Length: 418
Image (cartoon, rainbow, N blue to C red; front, side, top):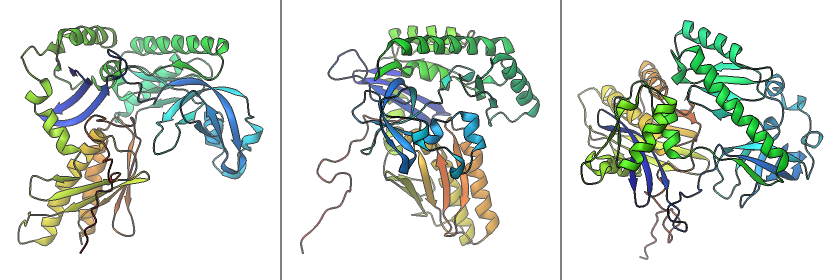
């Protein structure tokens, strides 16, 4: 974790290779404070401004520059939503909401691309071991916990912990955690929710009720996994803050935190800045000589795999497979670093053998299980493209690293007269 003049940065390395990167910049107009930037996870008391039956949605004023979007599924009770799978069975949005009505909502998608934030009434508060949902009325367990005996233990613990109408989801980090620690985590989050609802009664919409934790808190909460060997921080002040949080969230692991006292930029010394710059390029080279081209639009991301200078062996199919396998490993890592979300289409090099295609999709499925965000390998399309969906967690992973060209608007084309 590195603190600099322009903000805070955190990276995760696996054998020296960058696998995750997040940042939060300082606000240039308020020295010493972070930019408000991301609003994902924030909880607001909002006011319904418009109800649109044709879209089964409403727009709420939550105090941001653009009104937030609330879809009918995010208004109905979570269990009711599961029962009413067909759109025809759902009530009209007019029967549920009216202009002027005030609601407590949480941001589930950042504003961007000319659109306002998307919000939900299904509140969730993440803790160290579990996610607390005050009105969900069910227990879930992370799919990344594969041991069925452990999954059953966590389900039973969740049923004991939750009160009527409450719900909890056991996070991957809950694997092996004693029931007492899980109960303590839920109690803290329950107390936080009760405080929020108390505030909501006395505040007039639009109003902020809860801000998602800052970068340091999120990093300790979400990235301090069991397989982390060492946590390096760049200065004494940050070291003390991280130690305090680790002592609270993961007692007994403060010995992993070390202050990197060597002079110079911590990220430069470990090659993180160079790796991050390469990861954000449009064209990224593969070690074999092949390369991928990464294009993002508002609706989807398209990734094109090419053999480039890699000529492989005498077997064309083997050359294509090896390039695709190397690209799949890189793509799974870049999805995390770039925090790419939505629909992702990968144009792998065409392979004739169906078994090789399945090996590539299975490889990606295995690699994306390590992703903290929900990532699903949907499968191959009829045109031979691999479709992936991923939940985006932040508006931008590296806000200071890239900016859109003011001249071309990011199109990158130049007209030459002949």
